[in-house]
Length: 134
Image (tube, rainbow, N blue to C red; front, side, top):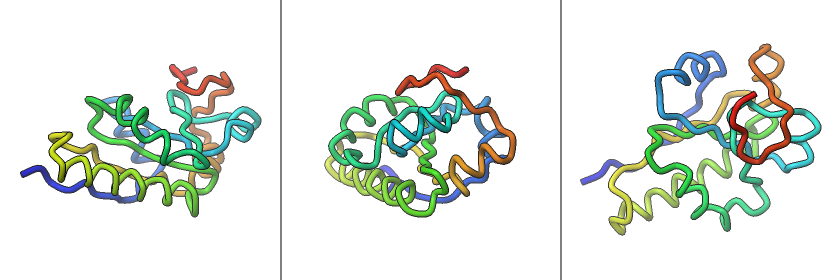
């Protein structure tokens, strides 16, 4: 039987360490305007919080083959954790219906994009919803 998806926090430093050696997706749930104005984590995907539930099937398609997914908003205090919980619930449902065999580990980025950027980690300003990395 497949294990249920879990949810935990990850620091920006741990994400940097994990990123090169892992099949990892980063999902930014901020609205497109903030993402464009302030930048985003290089290589991240934008699935806005306002329509996150409706976009879960598209996100699941992008997550195929990923071992982990990190969600964040500006500070990861409200929208990032809320969307991460929705994703975990959706993954649990898919597992129970045997629509997927395994679920990726789900993380919330501690301190969100603000913490990431203020720590000096790479920020991209490409404006693409599915950033290929800058």
